[in-house]
Image 1 (cartoon, rainbow, N blue to C red):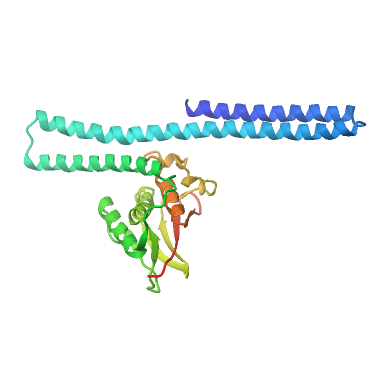
Image 2 (cartoon, rainbow, N blue to C red):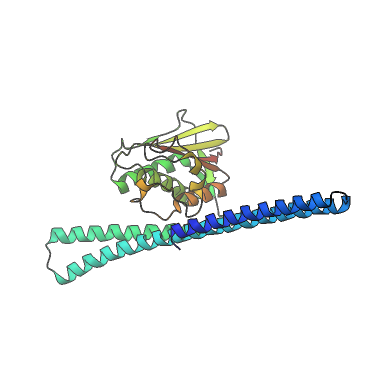
Length: 300
């Protein structure tokens, strides 16, 4: 269903719900006026009226939510299809070129490099979908004490390499007091959460990549990682929605940014699984974004 059709459907259900509520109010008020002397009937009528209004509101809210959820699902399928189809088509083109044309060694090695990059992109998309499916799993994995500061440092180095960034474009600022920043958790899951936040910051920075990853100890019981960028920013109304499954910020300037809408959903699921919390702050569009991951701290 096209977006315009969904919006018309949402508007229809909202208007229908309002009309039904107004009709119910009119009927109930008229009934009360005609039967105001009948106390028991009046009492039952008021209860019936309240239940009717509540049912109409719940029904309308449910319909609107389902329409929006279907829209998000369709957007996710389109995004995943594109993320899978584009690298496959690219790899096929390079292979056909190598099969039907004689190319020199330099160009052949360049084709190999590009195909490896495309397979990495394919693997990343598949891994995100799989991790999103596992995000709701409440099974407690075997956890060990992890040096969170060292883990973040490794993730920053990987992000610099994969995105071809200079050290000043992506800075890591460890804890000021030098105290241990150990957390109890699954190292691979923690690495996934930190990497997703860093990748998002790079992706939405545009041409001006200035990102800082700051590690802090807000108190004796917690360790916090703040990832700040100077990118496109997020409207205040969407700050909480960005952690929902399939959700992507509705900004026309971001139409070129590809993704599945699962990255921050996976981050939130991992952080909550480890007993922490995650939130985002932004002064609005064009003002950059800060994403904060906070975990319980354990003694080394």
